[in-house]
Length: 393
Length: 194
Ligand SMILES: NC(=O)c1ccc[n+]([C@@H]2O[C@H](COP(=O)([O-])OP(=O)(O)OC[C@H]3O[C@@H](n4cnc5c(N)ncnc54)[C@H](O)[C@@H]3O)[C@@H](O)[C@H]2O)c1
Ligand SMILES: [Zn+2]
Ligand SMILES: [Zn+2]
Image: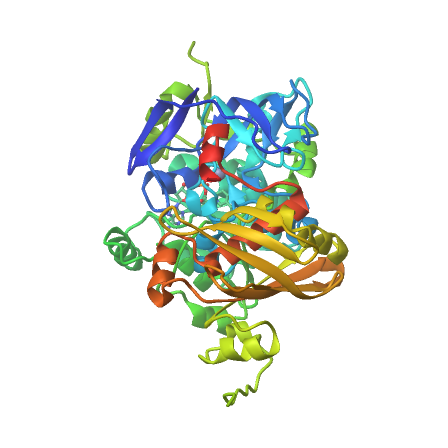
């Protein structure tokens, strides 16, 4: 089959590789119909994530048709499914608590060593996201092997278009969980750093959860415009000083809750950011963290910090003092996708949530390398690329 | 004369920083077989009786112990083990169950003439809603002493690494009915498991 493989920094290629096979009883093989490129994939593209190997197949946002099932799979051939990016067993203690991204059994036993060493305990597996998260082949391909297919994938009713439900695989639940973690109370003002897909879904979710005001921060006018469509006020950090603007817009109080939807590749010519960038590029090993620092400083006393943004290692100059003195609460983590999927599918079916506004480009899977380049270099115009095998044929 | 061994905490012996910990374990926990002591605990979301029964049938162990080539049952208490070692070699020994209590623990020791003298115990402790805490404690004498241990580590055949990974695979098998793999094709999987 054809698949998008990582070969190094800014080097991804369409390769011909063997078709995946059923290997465990609960497996299913899915024929991909739609798969998206994620902001997290850019971290791989830019080579910020360790333990990648040449030839690794990328992609963790995908859906398709069931073409083969293991004896313990509950799926049926021909069903259309969206697959969560977190690989979770459904039977361990953490899965029992719906903490799917903390599943004990999603990672192969040998791969668990890396995460156990760095994080203290191993996490769940992820599709197409380095060997630290299992080394599972991803879904930017014609076919994918899906472990634990009896608990992960959600079956999509006929007649519902791929574009409406594809984002159930990651970014919609991620934006929703981010807003939930902000513990929004009626009358709250919520500030969101980053108007990428995650930030935009967080904006939408925050309003649905009762936020009175949402303030969205980015530097791409088109992305800010999308946030404004959902009713957010905006700050362009290239035109305005973010802290000063937030303080004034909230009457000197600061936002009640702040959401960091940027992550380890924060842009901008801030002094701390440049230092981080130099350190990261000289392998002095720090995650670039401008947005989370700014969010903590701006947050009101006793407020909540929600951090869907991905960080992998250690950070410098984390404002621990401000965090402690102001008595803030921080909630974060990879998304427990399986937990949110059913309710969010309903919300989509009932047209309470629209996801299609996000898609700026639909391209053939064969054009994936070009799509990565566009997504990396023209974020103003490219909000989300959906790849479809065979689209151009 | 036995060394003085006293602690002021409740941490397990296997976490001790004292170089006499292995010796102490040999007096209180398991048969003394060497100066390397390894301990690992894992919580498995299944009843103790089920886990004990699976483990006590030693022929089952090869299904999740990656380095085991074969385990042949000799009689109710004795079994013959063939285990992979670094550089394509294998090591062998006879193991005998020295003590056990149903659904609670199994203790074993290698017999005279073992390539790698070893002993250990596996404890199953009910943990209510979380299932069962399974703790492995292993005492062994690495072949060629410290150098052998370093080589084994390089080849990932060090008992500490193996115990950790084997327990994870045991947990996966008991909780999910399968052992997780990121392999893509049957060919890759077979390569991985060899
Ligand atoms: N927790 C999870 O499970 C999970 C799941 C998916 C994505 N993520 C993470 O969420 C983050 C966002 O994902 P995305 O797909 O929306 O990414 P994206 O790259 O499309 O969007 C990030 C946005 O942040 C903006 N930005 C950069 N620097 C900024 C700054 N200093 N202040 C304000 N905005 C800034 C960028 O202009 C961009 O629009 C990433 O870190 C991604 O890895 C986490
Ligand atoms: Zn994603
Ligand atoms: Zn689990």
